Image 1 (cartoon, rainbow, N blue to C red):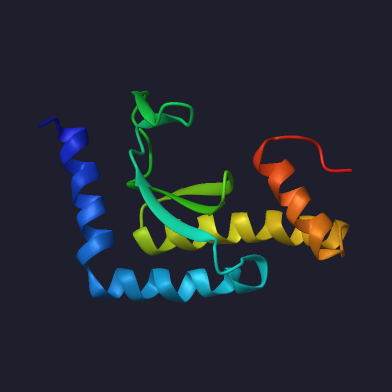
Image 2 (image 1 turned 60 degrees about the horizontal axis):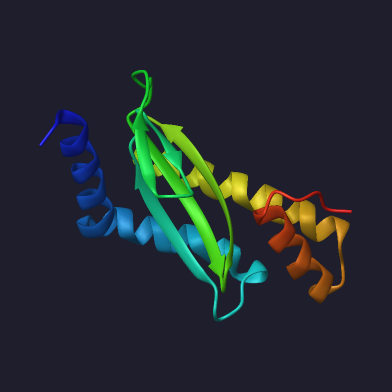
Length: 134
């Protein structure tokens, strides 16, 4: 196993098994409650800070060495649409918080533009597909 693979495995183990990290994640995702439905899946994913994520085939491509220790993505998925944000930090708690705040900022921007709940869901779906929101 390469050093990068070991590092990513250690980060995944930290997210999955450290009670303090798990508790922090649960606290952070509560902020998404106004923006999700019971069917929405909220994911917190550790990614290789030295790779580029290719969403089409879930592959990582090695790049230059990152200055940060952690790369965390927060993803909201509902049916066949998803919206995500990711952040880098030397502290896992900071990376989780920054990714959450970035995604919340996008959701609040959409909410402020569209007050009708049905139109808001459509706008979130369009944003996740990288289509312009009117």
